[in-house]
Length: 384
Image 1 (cartoon, rainbow, N blue to C red):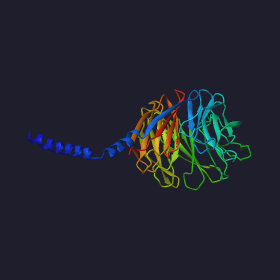
Image 2 (cartoon, helix red, strand yellow):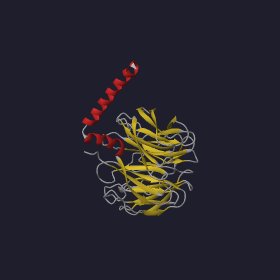
Image 3 (cartoon, helix red, strand yellow):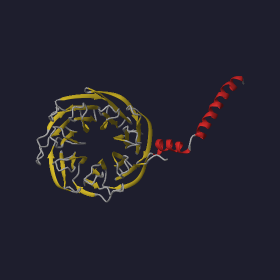
């Protein structure tokens, strides 16, 4: 009995202290914590698009200062463009038939008219379809460019410093990256192929060493490597470095998670149900800073964004098996300990972040592969 009293009384005292803290905390402070931890993101609207929307991006296609939505519908063989109505919602999609086999879509100014054009990869034909923007958000001019076999998720950036967007295409069936430089006169140079590990799936362009020239990083689906092609400043990539993470790597994104001016790499690992953050240590060195579980196994896409206005880049991950959106909150040092999980709809495949409603906060749009729709999530300010 003496031993029981020895443990019971301190425990009761701690419970009393905890209750006093809760009761004396102002209601607004309690709701603020709840809001940020659980309710910072709210599903607000759905938009039907074509069958099997796969990659979604958010360029300002009509140059009105508002981010719009563009999504590749792999099952329908179409591209859907939804323009922002200025109220955080979107009108009926404009649909562009492109044929079976389309895969990814990326945006960039290909002809120096200050309007974003579109690059769509076709896994079946080995072609990239370029749609030039007419200046008001329409895409009537089409050019097809040959690349390697099985182009997947492309990256668009100025690789040779001439202020014109070039293209990097991961050629899934050729185990290579095709770099296509753009002279800016409506033609494109012949693709230059660089070997990477087997079945490159997704690519991202980012200046990883701070020299002003973007590198190309890609994921190897089969062998589980991240390959980095280092830019010599002229648009050539003769040096490659590789990091082995494990099989079935899916998407890759770049963002400065540690606030040191150098972007980290964020990789989704499809079958393991985790993402891996590769911390940029400078001088071309990356180290794994953490593996983070995200769902039931099937994280498809990681999108850097800012959830809570603290100045640190958070991560949103869609999981195609769990039908969820997982938000990992950055604690300012590139580590993530808080997790918010929200339902998305059936089979989410990718997401994009932008301030869709003009409130100064990042929102998210998710493409749901199985249900053929886009789901919009808005960030809500903390309660006062």
